[in-house]
Amino acid sequence: MSELEGIYAIWLREFRVYLREKERAISSIVSPLLWLFAFGTGLGASVAIAGVNYQLFIFPGIVAMTLMFTSIFYGMYVIWDRKLDFLKEVLVAPISRRNVFIGKMLGGVTDAMIQVVVLLILAGVLGIPVTPYGALMALPAMLLITVCMTSIGLFFGAVFSSFESFQLVMQFVLWPLFFFSGALFPLDNLPGWLASLTYFDPLTYGVDAMRGVMLGMGKMPLEIDLLVLGIFTLVTIWMGASAFERMGKI
Amino acid sequence: MLAGNNAQMITTSHLTKRFDKLAAVDNLNLNIEEGEVFGLLGPNGAGKTTTINLLITLLKPTSGTATVNGIDVVKNPAQVRKNIGVVFQEPSVDDLLSGKENLEMHAMLYSMPGELRRKRVEEVLELVELTDRKDDWVKTYSGGMRRRLELARGLMHHPKVLFLDEPTLGLDPQTRQHIWKYIARLAKEENMTVVLTTHYMEEADLLCSRIGIMDRGKIVALGTPKKLKHEVGGDVVIIRQDGFDRSCLKGLKLVKKVKVEGDEVFLTVEHAHENLQRLLAAVGKVKSVEVREASLNDVFLKYTGRKYREEEEGAEGGWAERTMHAESQRD
Ligand SMILES: Nc1ncnc2c1ncn2[C@@H]1O[C@H](COP(=O)(O)OP(=O)(O)OP(=O)(O)O)[C@@H](O)[C@H]1O
Ligand SMILES: [Mg+2]
Image (cartoon, rainbow over all chains, first blue to last red; front, side, top):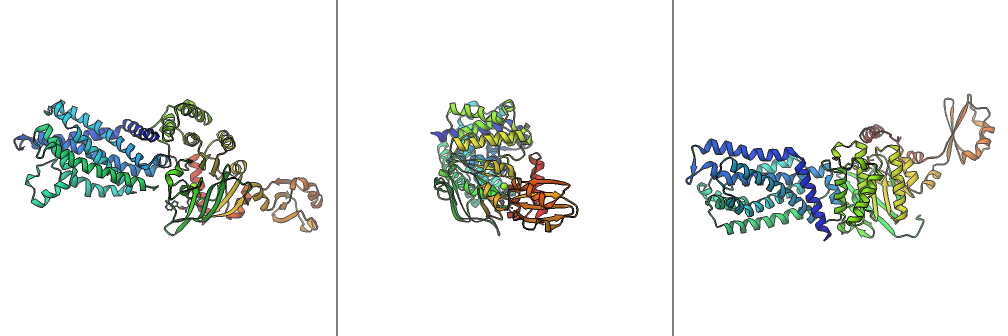
């Protein structure tokens, strides 16, 4: 399977670049910590949700957010690659576009997972009571979220050809997905029509799964969460891979 | 028009690419045989890079068809990619990887076996004299060094057809000569077909078995360098003489054209070296004489009608200068 080696080559490149681009890694760890402090500590003192202090309640949400932002940004970075022509070398190579997508996707998943592990360790240090067991149990959900979100990012990266469209994705995809996932507040109090919209948000299931295994506060059974999230993920992988097949030079 | 009866490695038929209104490649019909080193010349914006992008499946034609090694570039791009290698005009090596890492990634993408990979990495690094910088990040390379790495990468996997878009742009003369030798050897020993664009006429003359001159998306002249040079009419003899009188050349058939500028006289002459004596005998006493053999430069000027200048600068400076120059020529 020579294509496997090609996938590995692309993944390796992404991994090396990630390790060498310090700014990217640093900012993606600092920002979730800021959220955790600003929201958690500020609000947490006065607010409790379902008997849990707010900082704890949003922790799975912050993890989901880190995964999501890192993954989508990573994916959209392809626009840059295409502009700066690094990708040209890969696009004329005898590796199928689908596998170019897979290699890139795995690269993004690696970045995001490294960051989340760092975040989990820092959370432990900061005294957020998440057990190693809880963290381990959350792993499948975390993986599915990054695969799903990296694929969405790569999809947009392949479809759009300018960085201005990035803003659009932020406004109309990223923030809505985040806000209606239950990452920051429980979804129970939303009006009916909005509540039903949240069922179309893959992140809802990811957040619910993590909240379930980390805090015992899941609304749906873990299997259902993972199944639905898995289906979303397959769809986004398919979307991303197809977009790569059609992708040309900018 | 084609010399041998080799297989056609590249064919295009009514190949056209439009960007909005502009036809960057305009109804192009071109055949390139296996083993040819084909030179695509033409002023900035002529459509050389666009033609290459169509052939290497990075762009889809607006209309028309093209094949590489018998494979249709639109219907089966994946198969075409298995047959080609490319050195791009614009930089595409990875800044945050070392030179060697860039080459190794290439080898993996092209599934080169381990032994061959090591050998070729060494070989091409040696060729472009980057062996002692191979572990440094490309970020720290000079413009010319990046170009050399780019070229090394393209030469690594010995494809059936190699596309070189201004391969030696901004390289120093020694490196350029190494590269020329290497390309010529590859073409000969591996029967590799090479399509190269260049703005260095010397390079085209030396390397190419055939040349196509492109202007505004069309091929305006096609043939071996020798044939093209012959077509522009011969050598030019420049003499300096006060009070030159045209009538002295009466009856001298070998003089094709006469142009006087001040005390300089430009005579277009067939086989100037052999006929110089007769010519001077007819003209009489001169202050100085210079023989300029017909060059591809003359051919280029004739067909594209714009002035042209080779640049000797580094990659960036040279490129900018060339672009500016071309623009001022257009106005
Ligand atoms: N992506 C694009 N969008 C719009 N116009 C383009 C695009 N790419 C090329 N062109 C136009 O097509 C024409 C041909 O460009 P091309 O790059 O093929 O020229 P070239 O012969 O390679 O020139 P050079 O010697 O400067 O490299 C130019 O007028 C250029 O402006
Ligand atoms: Mg060009």
